[in-house]
Structure formats: C-alpha cells, structure tokens
Image (cartoon, rainbow, N blue to C red):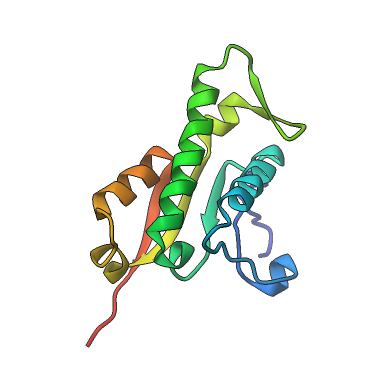
Length: 141
C-alpha cells in the first residue's frame, strides 16, 4: 500500500482466508452471530463495514430481513437512549457509533427480482439498518 494507509475505523468483513484465517459467510439462521460480529467491530471502532460475500447472505431474504430488523432495533435503542452507551453482552458501545455505522453489500440483480418477498421491503430494511451502498452484478446471456 505504500505510504497511504486506510484509516483504522474502516473495517471490511472479507471472506478471504488470508485475511481472517478462515472463510466467513453468514448463512441461514446465523443472524445472532452476524449481529455479534457487527457489535464486535463497532466496539473496535469500525465506522463502516462491507459484507464481502459474492451475494449478500446468499440472497436469502429470510435471513437478510431478520438481520436488518435486529440492527434497526439496536439503532432505535441507541437513538432513544438516555445514556451515551448501550451494553451488549458486557460490551459497551457508543450510541453515536451505532447510529453512525454504515455498511454495504453485494447483490446480483436477479436475486432481488426473484426474492419471495417484496424487493422493496428488502432494500428499505437494508437502508433503515444503515446500508448506504450496494455493489450490483448482472449476468449477460
């Protein structure tokens, strides 16, 4: 990287075993694990996260929506808190850090087209949970 370095608060959730020691992917039923991971990264000072799955949560809206809804609840708790911190399993997080966290993910266009629930519900929930950018891929032919 030379002289320029990424700012420390920018943290990515890479799927590369070289980066994290093993392949990480959130699968069906692992919403609690994903929330715990996000809490951990916010605790360490992350201001932005990128879920580097080739397709966010395998395109499973049955997991994406519960994840987003849970993070929305946490953001709402932070918004309404009368104290500057919230506690999660003995970890204190700054309410402002929770509210300021942005994240992004990757999708293919067909995932939203064929999702069993409304694609607008998925995108709206992601936005409300702090998702501020998506990378899109489409297949030709």
